[in-house]
Image (cartoon, rainbow, N blue to C red):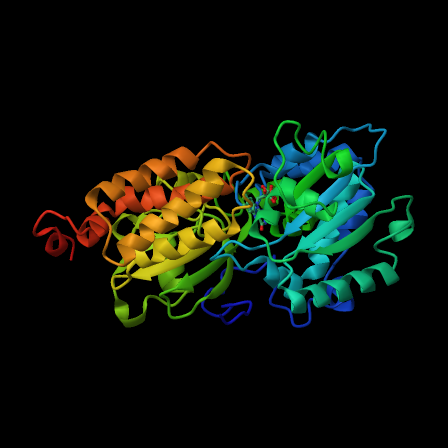
Length: 435
Ligand SMILES: Cc1cc2nc3c(=O)[nH]c(=O)nc-3n(C[C@H](O)[C@H](O)[C@H](O)COP(=O)(O)O)c2cc1C
């Protein structure tokens, strides 16, 4: 995958806000020369609750998968607390199809750090952790360099910008487990425990890291915050889709001519993203299906893409979700049974094993799918597979179980003919019917 901040020429109407076009923007002096850390200065002149209120009114919704309103999440943090409070910034980024946060680590780490500092000020937090996918060695080094520069220049640590406000930021490397992106497993991992998700309630705002009040937000979510404070919620909320506004990083992979990460306003049409931003499908082939928001989101048939947009509400209406905006495009020649078998294997491998339905069910799904891949599945197996997926969904401590079930459920519901065509006991002619 080629990684670059893409496409200022073809999409000149859009000025990038999360991964700007400016050369060397990752360097502290360049960032500051373009107004960097001025949002923090402005925030420090406001009351903490005014900062949270600004974020609330902006309608910023989390970019980590669930599109949860960020300001509302911040307001759950207790104002007074005898215990310390923590912020965990989630850069575990391990979902297949998702590779957008590393653009921020590479091209705009200071805006992330500035957003973290503003969040800490708003919530009365003095320590923030950035949890980064362990395989991101190069990007961890870049982030560490940015943090060292910010610390050396009085922007992180004690008495930030000459005020009373002090916050430390710690970079924590993951060790290759998808489950550690789940917020409570992430906290266990930082504590040095096994990365098992915790039962909720209690929620992190009451009982999080080391039993203390904690907020967890995605890297891209935090990188939006300086924009809101600097330019105001009204400006921000006019960008893109009204109910989930702002810039969004969309990672496009699969059968497109120009794969990569693209920054755009929320609410772009999926077809526009594929054809205009990502250069269309090689050989102008028909789009058979897309997975819109990373491997856990429900698959959408190509012929149902008309009018579907990259925002939480539009994708919900299309029977899927925005997830992490990792759009996987599959052309007419794609073997969808192979695709779903590979996805199922990932979830089977990544299940932490704590909950029986997920530990056992992900393995059963993978086994049944492997039978279909080899042409050994039966018509009855289709219903058994759906039954297994339905029994995982909603029956586990964390959403990894749902993430494993949704792609399988949606694949059967939307592409049942693909399974029937591969069944050994298919009614005669069904393979031809599906072809
Ligand atoms: C199995 C699993 C893996 C996850 N991985 C990530 C991840 O890598 N990054 C992330 O931001 N959120 C991930 N999440 C979602 C987090 O639990 C959490 O909702 C998110 O970090 C909140 O940030 P936001 O409100 O800014 O979106 C994952 C969830 C699950 C169930």
